[in-house]
Structures are given as C-alpha cells and as structure tokens.
Image (cartoon, rainbow, N blue to C red; front, side):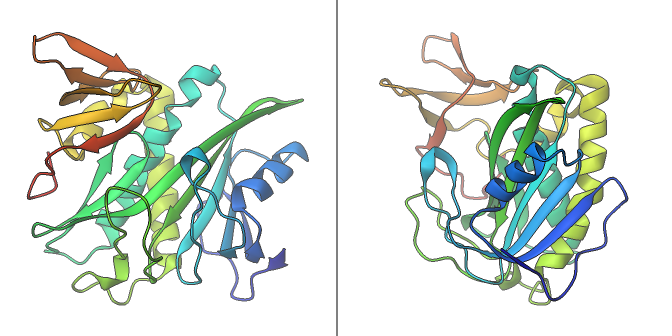
Length: 270
C-alpha cells in the first residue's frame, strides 16, 4: 500500500479521504480502517488495485485511469435496511455522472438493479460502474463498506457480464473527464441521497431511482439460487426488492439476484 502522489480530491467535510497509489483492494483497506475505528465517511481511493473484486467473487480488473474507491458507512439501521445503500449509492453515482457529462450529451446514466450503473446512448448500452456492498460489526456496531468501481479513462477488457464495459471519457464531449471529476461530483450527490434515505427510507428516493432505471417494462430473468425467475420488470418496492410481473398477472418479489434482460431496449432506458 502506497500513498497517492497527486493528492486527494476536494470533498465536503463529511468525508475523510485516504488516497493511495496501490492497494490490494480498497474494500479490504476500508475494512481494516473500520476495525481500527475509522469514522463514517472514510473514503479510500486507489489508483490501482492488485486484487480487486466484484460481486460473487468475480475479479474486478483495475487498470490505472479508472475509479476504485470504498466508502465506509456506519448507518444506525438494521443490517437488512443497510442493504438499501447499494441503491442509494447507485443513484448517487448516476447523479454524479449526469452532472459532469456535457450539456446535450447523447448518453445518459441508467441504474440497473441492484448495483450497476449503465451508460445508454444511441442503441448502445454498456456497464460503467458497479458497487460491492459488504458489512461487518465492531465495538461501535454495524458498518457497511460500499466498494465502487467505474471505467473513467480506460477500457478494462472483456468481462463475463451481459453488458460490455463502457468508458466515460470515450463519450462525445467527455474526453477531458478524469477520476477526480467523478469523485468530486459523487461526494455531494451521495450526501444528498443518503440524507433523503435516512429521513424517509428508500421510499424517499424510489421514484427518482425508477425514473433512472434501465429496463422498466422489459422481460427480465433474475438469477438467484437454483431456479431463475422470469417476468416483466415493473418496479421496486419500498424496501428495494425487485417486482417481476408473471404471465398470470401475479407479482414475484425478489430481494437479491442478478438481472439479465432478454431483450435490451434500444434506447437503454425505462
């Protein structure tokens, strides 16, 4: 682990930034800091990771030029509710990307349940960002680590995901964007979304999340456990569970899983 040479991004005082050149994993470093008593808002950012991880133990390729950060949170809620922070974080990242894309951009961020951020444009949809949410307990109680990766400057190469990687700086008019720009936009966006969530639960941001959601009204299959579930993706409920309408009109409620869309919408949006 080595300290970053170019300093930390400028963020509101609610964040304590730990900027590093290289680390095994920002989530692992954030967990180490949590167990040493680090406060809510500690944000670990690294230029590169040597052992980055995505969901379900997948490797997260970590070339220099992209965003790797982990945000330590100490929410005063039960662990079941803390899982909603994945949706809070994803919506905040969508806000941040929308804020730094040039005016009139032909692409827009779209959240994909439960933890991905896509960029959707002229018939093109790609994965820009993902969140890995992990939790633990220490003497102060529950802590949550939101590990966030985003393709800002560099194409990370092929992945096993359904959506191909897409790079922020490769979008029209966005060639100037750097990791620092995204982090500095994400900070206040996250504080805003988390504040609303803390006051009113997920219901406080649910409509905004749905407005930004990818695939509303499309056929989706959720892979979780031995039997995948297929239906029409119509909504999420107030606790963040996915609602799939079945052919007979009944609604299946799914609290976890990986969503695969059978027929991606041409525009990439709801």
